[in-house]
Image 1 (cartoon, rainbow, N blue to C red):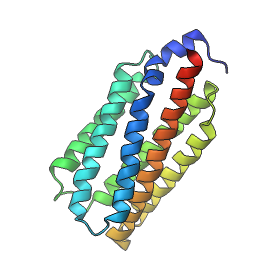
Image 2 (image 1 turned 60 degrees about the horizontal axis):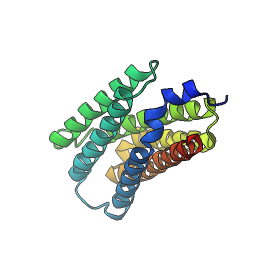
Image 3 (image 1 turned 45 degrees about the vertical axis):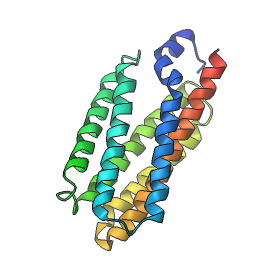
Length: 190
């Protein structure tokens, strides 16, 4: 499907804020690397760090939803952002309570991010944006990593930390690729 002026105006906020996706993706990527190089750090610290990341991700979703000209799906984007902010606040403020359930919370959040990325890839494909296949592939990898985190928590914190690091790196790459595609689209529209 070709981009029309109507289609472009509907996505203008997303396109002009391409740098937010890259910045958040870079943050996720760096946090994934940190998780790999500091696995011995406190498991509770992961809860706090992850809480901050989920809050930032939720704020990004709320911002895009509230500034979007797209009527369909706008409410879902805002609702998803609110859920992420609340989950992040919970993780950040009560890390001791979440010590035993953190792998499940991480797994469900990563799965949620993966399905969100599939939706983004679908939109990219609908509007003829190159790279939709890569976004879809990375989203599927994030979902696979989420399943490993969800179904292997008994194996121990080490595996959860490993899959968390891998998932954060993949989610970061996905967001940076998405931001780069939005930037390229913005250049084409000038």
